[in-house]
Amino acid sequence: MPISCACDKVFQSFSWRSLNEVNPEELQGSGVYAIRVQSRGLPVEEAIDNVKKLLSKFNWLKFEEYALAKISKLRKLSDCPILYIGAAYSLKQKYSLLYRARHPIFPALASLLISGWRFEIGWLSSPNPGVTESLIKRQYFEIHGEFPVLV
Image 1 (tube, rainbow, N blue to C red):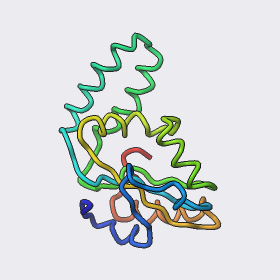
Image 2: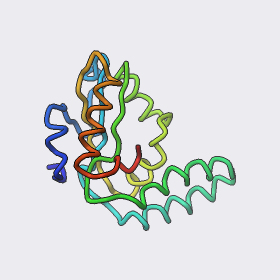
Image 3: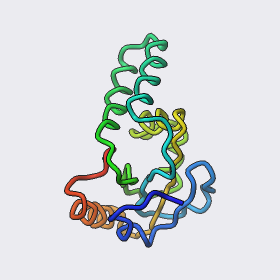
C-alpha cells in the first residue's frame, strides 16, 4: 500500500505498478509518468552517506560530482511520496532509461533502492504529454507549494 498524501487525487487516474514488477509492454504510447515511494528504507542521510562511501571507491571525480549533485536533492524529501513527474512520447522508452541508468534521477533512485526503499511507477496515457505534464505539475504545486523533490 503506497504512502498517502493530499496530492493522491492528482494521480488517481494513473496506472501504478511496483518499479521492479512493471511489464514494459504495459507502457504503450505517450503520456505522463510519476515515481512514488512505496515503502521507506534507511533514513535519507544514512542512504546518502552509504552512497558517498561507494562513490569514493570509483576514483572518478566527475562521476562522483554528478551523482552527488543528484543525490543531494534527497535532503529535501518531504512526507509526500511523489519524487518525480515527467512526460514522454514513449513511456516504454522512458522506463528503459530508468533501468539502464540513463535517466537523470537514476543516481538518487539507486541510492535509495540500495538502502531498502521501494518505488512505484505510475503512468497516464496522453496524446499531448507535455501539456498533460504541465497540468499535473500545476495541480501538484497548488497542493504542496513546490514541485516534487527530483523535478
